[in-house]
Amino acid sequence: MPLCTIDDFEREVLIFDSDPSHSYLESSTYLQAYSPESSKYGIFVFYQGDVDGVCALFILEHHKRISNGLKLTSYPVVGEADIYTYIKKNLSIRSTYPDIKHEAYLRVLLLGVHGWDAQVLYAIKVHFSQLLPEEYRNDLRVCIVPAARPLSFFNVSFEGDWYFFVANEQEVTQEKSILERELVGGIYRSPSVASIIASITKTTHESSRAAILYASAVAVISLLIHYGAVDTSANKKITKIFQEIAMLNGGPYVQLDAERSMLPLISFTSLEEALRISPHFFIYDPQRKKDTLAEFRIYCNLLMEEFTSEFCNIDPKRQSQVLRQLNGRLKKIERSQLLWLRRSCTMPSVDMIYILLAISVGWINKENISTIDSAAVMASDFMYNTLTDRMSQDSFYDKVIIPQLKNKALQLMVGTYDMVSSSQIKSRMFGSHKVLFTTLYPKHQVTHNDELCFIAYLVSNIYSRGDREGGLCHVLVFIKNSDANGILAYGYSPEVSGNFPDIWALVFSSISHDDPSFVYDIFRPTCLSIRSDDFASVKNKISERLRIALESKQFSYFNDLESDTEEEASFSATDEDEDEEEDDDEYEEEEEEEDVQ
Image (cartoon, rainbow, N blue to C red; front, side, top):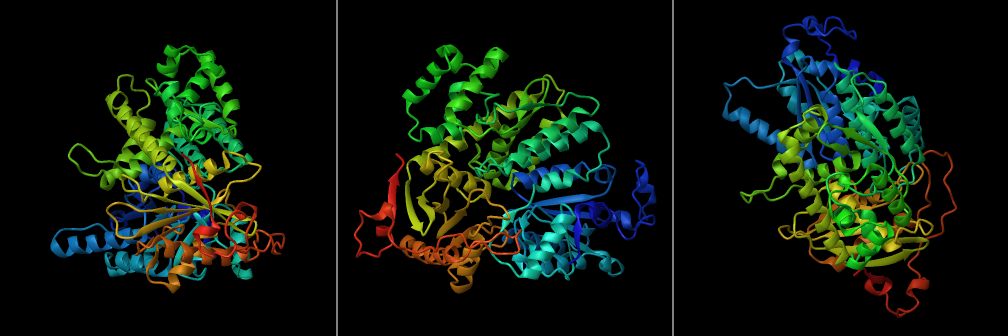
């Protein structure tokens, strides 16, 4: 497996071996250098259907070589089954219509994927190579720009047939070191894949450059917003992106903001409504009492009319004052974001994240059909209309579509709060580690990784009530969807990094090897599908495997020596369990139950 830095991406992925020049051609007419045969082929992209993956694809589509004619076809994936579904559909179409000329590709790119294995990669290689003429099959390359680290966790050799791309030489050194030391202790996220792609994307116009930089900022924030991470470098990254955009001609394109990120959709709603859907306000008051809203209105010294009318109609200086007061009251971590400036409205990065989440999750339309199958097209359409049509003053999209998407995001968030607030949170101590458990029965289908992360983030924060000194907890969420056979489990760990890797992928993959009723999806390493409705048995099996993982010495992938500072985990009673019967070893008796209602 060639392990490359992203600086090699254009040469290895966007320039084909059949190109006679093999050079970086800056001319907009460079396509004349292509041979007639090679110009038939292009790039097929399987991209992860989360916010980072959607932004990464948006950025790649603006690359100069793509804009000037290099063919790119994309297909969203959420789980491993999506790859095989595409292959089966494609084979079926080709067998049904053999006389029609079908597309073929010299590059297959997996963009922003959370996992992979040799079986999936070989299936991709075999399928796409068979679509090419025999003389071109050796030119096919399967390339991966992964979101998960370390690469060695997924048991794919560095000497294989795949091209992996990481951010820089430092990451290459780290990956080789982890492989040599044979460390296996969980996974962690890479820097935003969208920002990695943006770093090497050459655009035709500076307005396109501004759009992809803004999209990279959205992706950076999306990786932090639901993990409670105190990443001091994130604000520096956003400021750096802002400064780069400010240097472009044709602006101003963006505004730097550090006040609105705690109130999603505040640019489109009243302050009252923005507080109702703010995760920070929900964590502050999970019961969402009306008295709390009144208390905040009085605290901000606002009239009822000001509180319930559109916030953007308030004097800008007064807006800033109110937002600073709310930041102090909610004890929110300061997090910068960018506001994309449009003639008719402004789009904050956080708002775009929640709208993309609502699109990805989908909803039932007027024809009683789920929009999930068209989610990828809707997400792409939303980003293009928002970021490329920014100067339209009387845009139909601004007047009709964006308000509809705002309402769908609002409905999703309110529905999520209703579901979480009506649940019961149970805690269990594993030595020095506290793990929270909850079971949810959603009214709509809950399967998307970003939505699951949002739910678990709320559970962890509600339990700690935002008390960072006590630290956020690991969370295990069980989802019982109404139309599903079995249970979906999702494991959440806050503040994951190379120093503190996420153990859920290790726990879920190991238990699936021993029990066929537990189905592990390599593209969703923190999820586990369970072919059973026996919650008690499922909890006990996962808890036992979790105990083993937590008892192991926790180490950093970035240090040569393992840390031995962790306390030994056990199921012995803690202070929180002293009121329970000591002679009862049943799972429920070892938990502390908290009703958040």
